[in-house]
Length: 237
Image (tube, rainbow, N blue to C red; front, side, top):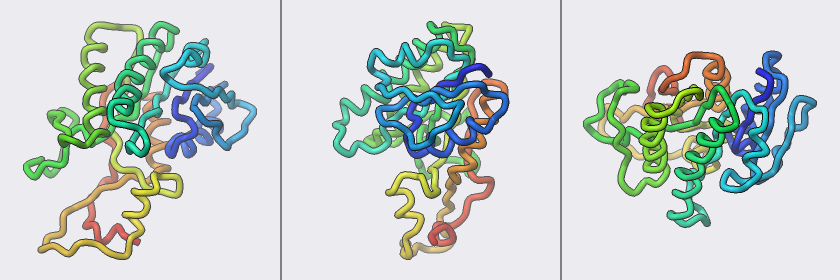
């Protein structure tokens, strides 16, 4: 590929993905787009500082063949809920629409298994055709589901841009969200009656591998998680 854009390139997953893309001989140029500069420097890497809601996005998209959209507010922090939703939902719509206008051929967006919701009557194995039913009040899951609802309509009404959605499970690893890592590293867990509830996580390097593979694979919707769930007590370290 001649030119690949990564939004949210300085984020937790972007920091793991960028070295993979730079080492890929099939990619000539990578544009790293974020509000902060990533730490990585490489001859194939072009760094642009900007916001997906700002005018810099159009510049970042010039001549891009593929877009990997990772920019998303996961936890509110200092961001109020209305602004979080605007960035997550309207921002993603803007990335997709401008990517198509710029002539990009492929777009890969990092979605989440949170679109299914953690419901007690969920089947043991969730396939991609499981209805999306995020937990009310969980902003991240609500926003990911809203984005996917919009993508359903976009893909039905537009052609020319092949879209892939990777529904990633909770990502752990040295670069993962501090809260997720703290939970995984805790020495304590809640004791409940056997059998222990099963938990699935996704190692950050595996998430990056899935993104690179999807960049060259057929477009579509894919659940990405560890092959086998395990009791939470077996995951803490």
